Length: 443
Image 1 (tube, rainbow, N blue to C red):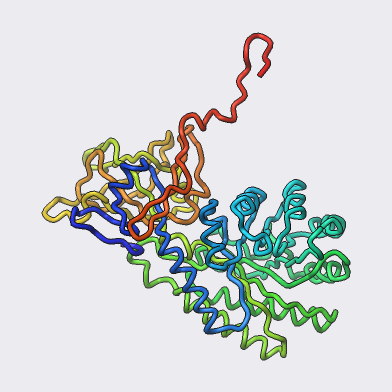
Image 2 (spheres, rainbow, N blue to C red):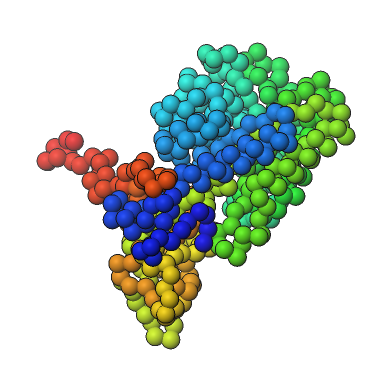
């Protein structure tokens, strides 16, 4: 069992001291459930690890993992920065009241409207991703009304963290960032440093996601610090900030718990490497930024489903269909992601036969399979199935394929549940449609 769950006297699973059966009845299914206390605990583990190991640091929550207004407010309350990658994420942050001077704005293709929005409302750090973007900023930066535009340069350090190809972003052959080859990054930074409108603060990199070992992060820190030393030696540019991105992996299955480094061990090793490298280069210690997302929210999140029809193909497989699927969790189809599940209304099934089944969704796709094979006590229609470890990249990647409404989001803590994103209704599916009226075709 992942996270801080327990079984109550009714043999029901509890998350944040809330009965999942009650949650399903109150808010419907599918339903994303987040243990707010567990989110805050992970954040505080990051803060405490840095506080004891390094003098200057900032932790920026990676909003792409999971973001809504309530999450923005939680992050603000914990004193973190926020990393956004689109105008939509930026807008949600702004509308939630998040302090914009603690927002890091990423993106390899920030559109004209996105750039205009951020330049107008303000930003804590702007991550420059390409020469063309830099050329735009050299002109547009003069319109920034909040002083000089503080920028970081995203570098592709040429490191393969050996994760899934779709979530590897630090290799030279990447759509993100400036490569170090042929002095491309160097020329860009020197040009930006000569601008009267840009404040070049430091370097940024993100080498990938769901990384199982610490070594790739340490290598990235070495590469970027070496480059910072080159900039100082050749051009007299001393950068004060080093953003090492996110990507720390987390277990999705019980048997994986020993396979991933802890938050504390990751932070400790990173700080030690930066100290050691700076000492060898005689370089002043920079401010370290990190951008964790999955390691803060994934284990805290679960998805509740209600079991529908159960179908057995004799001698082949038994299929257990739930009322969600690839629309609320596309990761099994995209990445071959693996999950585990619990029958939430009958957790401890003593004396009941167990069987191997496949958990499948309701979409019109043969590949709509959440869990290809899992051993569970016999499952019946109406049971509440809890799929664990769905806090990251489930809500944020959800779709309306087959015009299936997206689930709501509930935060639970100390026995109290609050709906923070309402579930979509059928009416929401046609809210944006423009239907021609009469023969004239007017709307």
